[in-house]
Image (cartoon, rainbow, N blue to C red):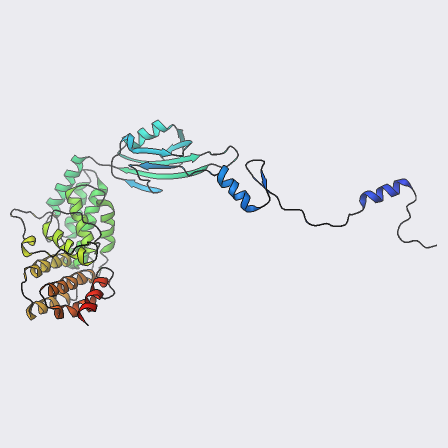
Length: 387
């Protein structure tokens, strides 16, 4: 008779058949999430994440210089004591002076190295080996120390005043200053001062000073100079930094420059920009120069015009069409930089309001609507006086 399937002729065949039979499929097994750092297992991924965060989470190592962490690439211009240097969460520390060959160091030697050097580039690598079977957490720093002595900086300041402390410098004068400063040192500081003067010349736009015709990109020079000079606690550096911030309409700082007309005008505009709680309207005497004051650096024509007109407006005791005509002429100058134009419009409008003639301020206020610095103030005044 025919049969279905293979004939199992003996016990051996029946045994082999039983061991190769595929069992009926059942439900899938429950998922298991094992911890890669220990023998714990978890039924859910969320449970594994909670366990890892609680038991196996490492902290990033970092350094503090004077209470603040430097960026990954930092230029350091202020000296630090050993007590000002802190290494946090670092189990291993490496130093390199060429960016490639790192040498393992202990904490004491690293702190001493960072505190003692004044003109050196150091690559610092911090590692936190928080688990034996886990990759360490690493943080790298590229630190350039450019710390100059007070005597060297004073020599550069004196050279700057001798070469460029005048109202009409030229590109040639800047080149002379930079060449002579190379024999003193502190090249970065001198270059920043030179960048400022080049920015003044570019902003003024006079080809007779040696600049290229049509080149008006002065902000790049100003920004470059400010990034460096604001780190130096020196009268000349702070004066130039203040002039750059004023020209760029950065009214968030109240640091004085010892140039009284500029400081008074800056406070006035800062109050209108909403950076000061109480308005401060100066009087004409505030703009008077001290007897014997010497000129130490040039000022771009736009900033000089703003300071000058602020002094004039503060002396006005009665609004008139002559004042309005004068301000319209100054604001309408074709070569006037837009940042200086909005400062003059704000001073114009505020003076008309102070003298009880808000109608004389309306045209200036309308032109300020949408401006980053004075737009909110202008809108509030327009809502008040256009009802």
